[in-house]
Image (cartoon, rainbow, N blue to C red; front, top):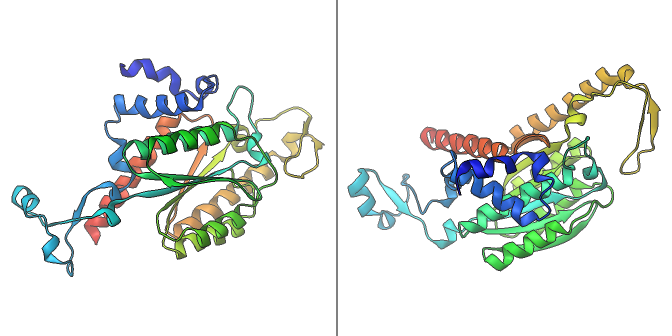
Length: 307
């Protein structure tokens, strides 16, 4: 199908009208594969490659001499234990994820669609993905697998996910750090409606266990810009009581607090070598993912050159 046939579906407002999550994910993934984003697969992780560059100390018996003959560079063959890429996708389904500004996807719908697209992308290239859906507790968990039937199970679980109770991100991160025995990639998709220092401790625990971590921080555009002008009754989520107030009187204080919150997470993640990716739900999903994949691929390449 030509690229232009997909373009309309990549708008979050249009995606919101597509009822089937599987179709949403397929449209996003196939849309940018068919178009200008030729190979997002190779950008997602250098672990996808079946070779890596030789470094001092490697066993020379594993050098691929055929590749050396073509490239005049030494590459080591990676075997299944090294190349089997395992991704654990963690989706926040707490009550605060139910928020949506007028005409937008809820944060949960957007996050579920992003998670579905990532699972689709990973399993399509025969790598393994697992799923964890959580609020204050783990509500659903699917082990890692690369089978097409497993992808359908992930999509079915995501499609049936509804907003739940309060957020307790840190406890979920600690639990996953203890439970995941084999190191892999952990992708967290959440509005991070929790104490940032507690979140960072949970992320640090995952890094201590040698997992690579990506944090997609979802916010609605209203939460970022706070555009309210008239006297407004704000309905509380996750146990916070409603409040009637004049938003213009508190807008600047709110924006300052949001900036501090996001910056604390950004700095903390940088210190633990975690990718922090702020996302608003009005952003086109294929652009969000492709921009991140390109940034990740560039960082990997720079790291390899400086090693």
